[in-house]
Amino acid sequence: MADRKYGAAGGSGSGFAEEDERWFSLTATIEELAGANSQEEVIEILRHSTREVIGAEGIAVVLKDEDKCHYVAEDAKEPLWQGQKFPAASCVSGWAMQHGEPAIIADIEADARVPIEAYRKTFVRSLVMVPIGSPHAFAALGAYWSTIRVPRRRDVAMLEALAKSAATAIENSRLIAALKKVNEELEARIARDRAELAKAREALGRK
Image (cartoon, rainbow, N blue to C red; front, top):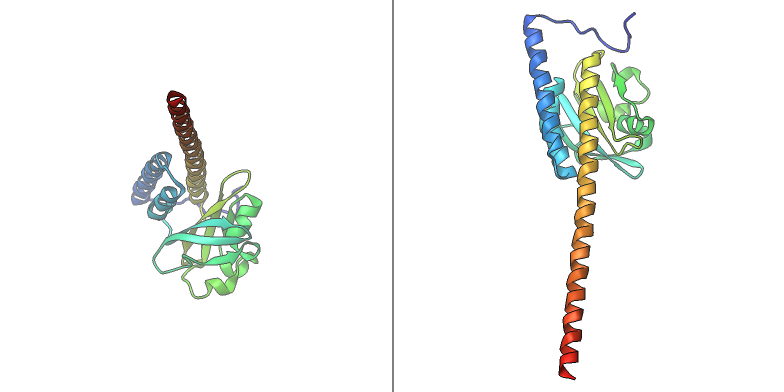
């Protein structure tokens, strides 16, 4: 029996062609994420690629900021919440990060996790929000549609694939940044030691 949480895949000739394009886009985006050197670069890749991969009418990248969710980037047919912060305890992205699993919402009016007043002025009527980072999520990636719809398994799987690739890229960029900082500190210490040694030799030479 099919899982009623997800919609049917459906398909026509043109639909299959579109599916192929989206899989190609997913592969290209994952490769692009693998080459990212910073969190900012990862966010920008997600911002300009996710909507095409998922086939959504809007997407958002959300960062955990203590007890709030900060909507740092978006690509949508109409403005959503970029730049705004919401309490994590009353936010769909906060729920996804706290529970470490996707929030799959077919109708925002029928789901208690949705802070409905924040959505009423937007086009959003259904959404999928997935956490970024495991086991402790530090961000989330959301996709939005203007109609009441049950998301297909493929939509969720693609969004999760992007989120996992983004998490790896961000963790790697943080590791590279930490190693770079250690290397810079070591070089600075070596430079100081050399300067002190030179002074000591100079002092000995004057005696």
